[in-house]
Amino acid sequence: MANSTLFQNTSSGIELLPNASPFHHSDMRENPLRTYIVGIIISICGNVLISVSLNIQKYTHVRQAQRGLKPYYTSRLWWCGVLLMGVGELGNFAAYGFAPASLIAPLGCVAVIASAIISVAFLKETLRATDIVGGILTITGTYVLVTFAPHNSTHITAMLVQYYAMSLTFVIYLFVEAVLFCVLLYLYKMQKLKHVVVVLLMVALLASMTVISVKAVSGMITESIKGNLQLLYPIFYVMLVVMVASCAFQIKFLNQAMKMFDATEVVPINFVFFTASAIVAGIVFYQEFDGLAPLDICMFLLGCLLSFFGVFLIARNRTQIKPQDRTFITMDKVPEGTQSLSSPRPALQHMDPWQTGLCAAGLANQTTARTICWTFLSGCAALPAFAEGSALRRTLYKRKNIFISKKEL
Image (cartoon, rainbow, N blue to C red; front, side, top):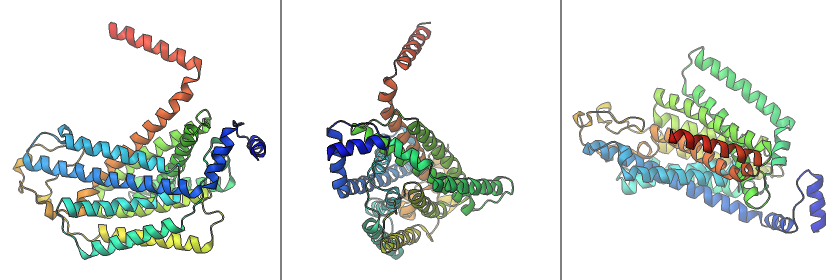
């Protein structure tokens, strides 16, 4: 059995593995449910940490504005929130290497539930009946989609990613997505069509490429950690560049949407569009629904719809804060003369759970942190592969000497 595994891997273009590797891979194939559950747990924990971090940062901004203290970035509590956000995003990044992308993306609704619970429990927010109904629907939808999602555990290798990237289905999908993005960009830039759906559709199209590249990078890093080095293949760095570029443009368009529209309108629509694009990307690129029964597909989609509707109930139709009561500080700038505002003591009970946790600045900050954390983790994983080239080591040595000489001058 071991010899057949070795010859099969060799014929498919994968490197010849040592005797221990086929046993390890066969063990993982015999226990796909274990890998599947690990990915779900990591994703849920990561989303909870992100929700906690956003609430901590929001609370810090409100406290600094209320007391007229130093800027928010001088607070240790704010930096604790940033650290928690980084850990949560790293958890989401790792989860893509264990579970299907079509499952990890919808689990983002866990952050919505956690944010509402934290706001009510610790920030003394008002709990509405629609919040309870929305929470029940979101939890039910999450349970349904986790139960009926594809339970396969595919080992993402460089050869497999190359095979998927050159498939006819993905080429057609990429062409259609590029044409649609160009049309939307033309309407947005040239025709001045400033509509929330237009902007967030462009974000969703970019997000589909982000999901594809993130799962590829995370999967190849996971395989490299297991002993099957994948970081020497050019496709790894191609996917890394796609991941960084798509995340960066998402930040740009998402910030523009936040400036033009209200957060309670942008955030739920963005969640729905992002989840739908991630599911389609997983189906088209990674063929995650292959072999899935029609009933399972219908139940999975039903779970997604329940989660979408629950998020809309929690986020929409909330009482907006009056302009003179908006004394919380955005994350890009601390206004001067905060104590001269008309309402010097902002009441936390006037802020709803969604605005307290996943506010406009918080969502943009989360996307920025996601780009930085995912890029940093990928770069750290790629360092051993770079170190194997002696020419690169000599180049780094020369640069180090040049840096030292300039410093001495």
